[in-house]
Image (cartoon, rainbow over all chains, first blue to last red; front, side, top):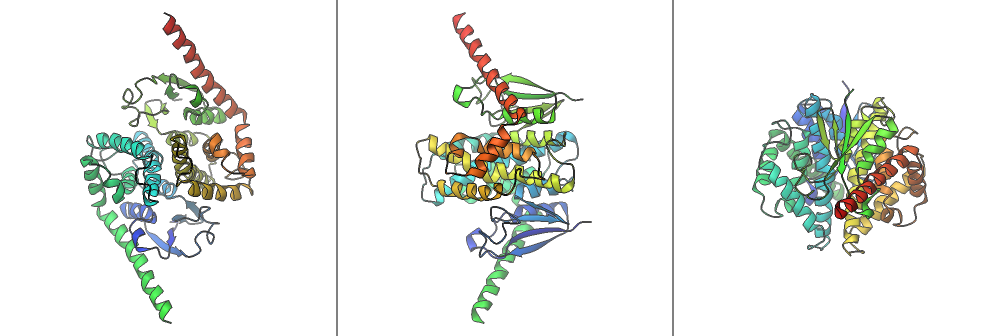
Length: 216
Length: 216
């Protein structure tokens, strides 16, 4: 069996902990019970020190034996093909999981991340507000009718969609009870809780090391 | 063999012609020589009249026999599995095509579309300008070294990336000769030219029908 390795930064500022996208891959591996290791690349110098592995200087990337894949969405699709816990094996279940994974990345996150970026830049009432509200309303309507996006069961599509929606600014953007309940259902899974706790512990351990380095 | 059908609007305003995303699926089918039909759904009432097929009221969606898939990126991934003209069949080639398709959707288009949206809303100097410049510069550097993104040959990753980059506002954002040459190479392919001409003819034919309806 090939060895799965999730590559992430050695350290990130406290506010980012629990939200770095290696979490998507950790969560998927936990969900599918795929064994994996986590390896560190330096946060300092990230703009240039690992461009050979990730051309935008970001994390995570995934290695699977000698294969290497960047983009958390691509890593997640790669992992999904390894386990029917992440993606049903029938044609319809597979196609629907795929479409909802891409919807999370290209219809929802394509609005929520730029909206959040503008908000963080001090542009609270930005022109993406209306677009984002519309998308989230469409999703709210749909999530009122179903527990999970595909095939009445948790799939990688829910993993990705819930990870996009759980960002607190996005969740608190309007009152959408079905979406809120959906995010709660997904993030209450033991696989999510373990992945999140592991990520936070990973970055906290680096805090301790940073303090030691300074006292040398 | 199952029948591929690309669903798109019956009509769109002139400025959108040549850019509606059914073009991604048309281009892929032309590239892979997969037979397909194009079917129309009404542009008028699009916000609500086909939510059962596309929960965000958008186009395209793809049907393949009884399967139905929305999100152009998902449709393109589905088609890519049908032909090695779109995605190499070896593990590394497949993983790299996948990662670059997701990069086009979630690292490039996630900035370019919201940036364009803000620009169109009259917010020319929006806070996404710096982010977009950085991403396009990273891509420019990479495209200076290679003709195509994956495996020294055209794949669905180039189809998607070139479709994202060919938007004129994006292309004219700074001077990036390698990116410009890349977009030219991709859009000079006969499969792209046919797909684009077919889409424009499809919407032009609806103009004629609209005129007839009005003169009845």
